[in-house]
Image (cartoon, rainbow, N blue to C red; front, top):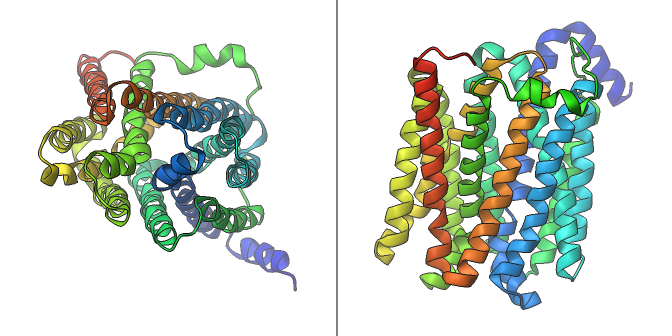
Length: 401
């Protein structure tokens, strides 16, 4: 009997529980791939800048391509998922990831590298939507917990990426070869999802961009979009520039700076593992508020304290940990109809944050120095704090969602 036949037979024996288990496991794997692929760029950035002999600003322009692709993909794939199903979106995400990684590991010019990251960003954007939407639909009663647990796998992939890259760089392996190894992981992820059976959607939405404002900008949803935009700007900014900051501002060696990057993602992973239960008890918005305040403290201490306090920067990952999945869970509570489209708009704003964060830090560093460029994160977190306080006030006053 073929593999497909065996899988079909198992599904027929106990379709509901096995389908839920396999899809949940597949979503967790996809977020591991997401974290690993997305966070190879930070530890390989100094090597890429040195090889191409380009400035921080040009490096920021190259990264701009990835998050522009992410921004576009999240909006489009949300609508496509409502129309054609999540399986098509997730497999398409894997194809884009493979093409983008292959191009980025091959091309020499900044324009082509940025174009490759644009395609990679399209894949990441589609991958951001798909697993989150599946988890919300499969585990609606405990989505806050499962979204945070899924994000633990993102943290694990993100943690291993700089360790893997740092090890290969330490033995003089090219940053391009490091990216080529990632193609094997992407291929495995796509292969597995081809054979997973997805539950049929209850309804099929019409592919109509004109209805997006009516659907996705009701009530206080825009404040969630502001929150996620500037949270992601801060997280991606740190993930993209922490290694470069530590190496060039504090003269910390390559191995130690990459270990600091891994520590950042270890804190993200641990925080999400613990945070899923914390959020369940404290509530969505209060949890985000507490963690945002902790994040601001860590960034200020790490940036403006003595060199010995630089460890506060990667420690920020612990406080960042629950913010993204908890915002996702809170938004999914506001509307169940056209849920994929609303999540697509949410993740589009996340993509906007990804564009703003590393790009503004890159040009700030180019014009005013690394410390000043990095301190833009404090502004991002201040805006996040204001948006969460506003949401808490609006909800406590009984305003409609």
